[in-house]
Amino acid sequence: AQSVTQPDIHITVSEGASLELRCNYSYGATPYLFWYVQSPGQGLQLLLKYFSGDTLVQGIKGFEAEFKRSQSSFNLRKPSVHWSDAAEYFCAVASVTGGGNKLTFGTGTQLKVEL
Amino acid sequence: EPEVTQTPSHQVTQMGQEVILRCVPISNHLYFYWYRQILGQKVEFLVSFYNNEISEKSEIFDDQFSVERPDGSNFTLKIRSTKLEDSAMYFCASRGVGAGNQPQHFGDGTRLSIL
Image (cartoon, each protein chain N blue to C red):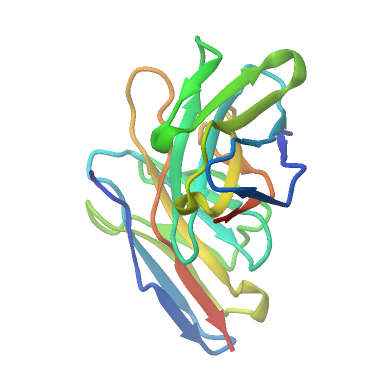
């Protein structure tokens, strides 16, 4: 069964600093990977996705992520964090078996941005 | 941009009562999902639905739960005889079809509180 690990429960960065959120996955085949962001009281907004091809994917709001098969990782990065980026970030892997492409989420990383 | 909409945003129900959570997926999407997030925990898959039938369900999705697409636009989750532990945020998601794999788009969720 697939799984996702986000080792950092909380991360605090200063505005303008760079950011890297870690994600490790376990999946038996080529994974479909996603990063979602959840602001308080809101739903899950898709930041970016990886299906195949270029291992560095660009997303919305200046985020990018790099797929590294050898490390089973899909870390999210942003060169310069804005105060509005404070939210919870979820990494997820899609299962292509079972016909439904269900998502398995990590436990999330809560990002705090200090002004 | 098309959105997944969920109603109500907050539902308070007495234990033992039945609740119906409603979702309007994105209009040209064909795959539909329900997830839940218990407070402080990660987002968990409940069920996926395609072509008017369940394509996959989790262990959580027992006989207490059912889903239905009663018309061409709505997708509902019914919980019979609610329990205290059903208190959670419930998210609906939908996914289109096309070249490659398509991401799931989420609604803002329904917060279900069982008293």
